[in-house]
Length: 171
Image 1 (cartoon, helix red, strand yellow):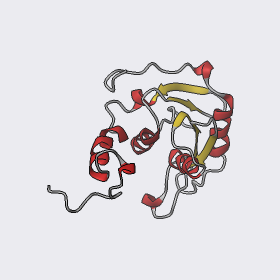
Image 2: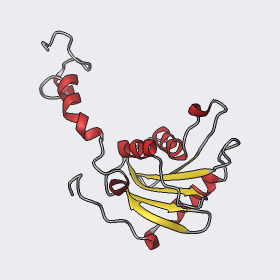
Image 3: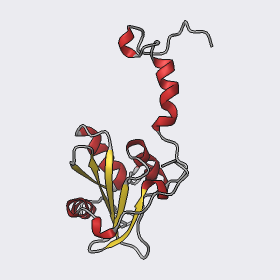
């Protein structure tokens, strides 16, 4: 599927119970003393492991971070490198979807067809794919050809050249 196509949304009844439970449990741990807007998220990695995270506010407002960011950090710390499913739990008049910054952070580790379940404390409120929430996104594959050619000699890193860009190379 091209990056310009819309991905079909996952079905609500296909939501993995443990992923939703982890997002709900994470929400209960949120540190949101200023906004009182608690959010929990859970990501499933390529090994099937689930990593939860909550929003953490700070008195210096820009220094807080979102639940999805916390969940991604937990995944990376555990050795995960690819997100295969996401759940976000928040309680509001409108379903709580990942913010723009978190959509981009998720994109670093997830493909367009990654399912995202939006839930409150009891119900699945919506289902989306990352591609539907972040169409025409900028992901790591855009940089991969440039990084590979700048970082390694012909033949790749095992060819014996420098691991960093060669300063002697002409611009």
